[in-house]
Image (cartoon, rainbow, N blue to C red):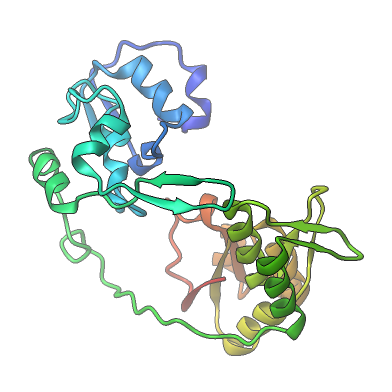
Length: 271
């Protein structure tokens, strides 16, 4: 039993079976991740069992590289993702400002499922013994006027120069990322520094869920600083402290969403 970051410390490849938990971590596309390449190179001929509660959290196109780590893949006759996509993906184009690029997110769900279904055993949450139900609500928060002004200028000019730093959105990807950051109240500048621009969302969460023990998921590191400024000592990032005290917890999406129990949280909030 070992985490993927330490896989290189095990030199033995002579295993009877490989079990991969959170297997959707193999599922980057259109290009394979380093993790996927390492697993495939070392263990592709070994029988494998994949475990995941969300095998395709973003797109059905994630099936290709996830299964391509094994020689038993139902897609093994496709030598690369792009050839597979010709048959299994509705390929579209998107204008990113500097060029039009192909987008491979729209996997053909029914066609892909027909190919992978013989290899899958599925359980609903109820069948797996889950007793709680997820009720999802979208809450709207009014931000400060400066946030809307910066986003408007960035969309128009693709660049905003302020006293604290330069915000650049000269490509479609960078523009979306900066708008994403600003929409939560933070921004990372071109020189690598970052700052909180607008505390509205952190204050909204604190006021809306006051006196409740909650878990807050954030994406960008500066968002954690924003939450800490509002919550002070009532916020922790340690799961043991969260479970043993009345403090709320802040977790980053990428590192905190898998393999943990938040049963002590009355609400789970995403920035």
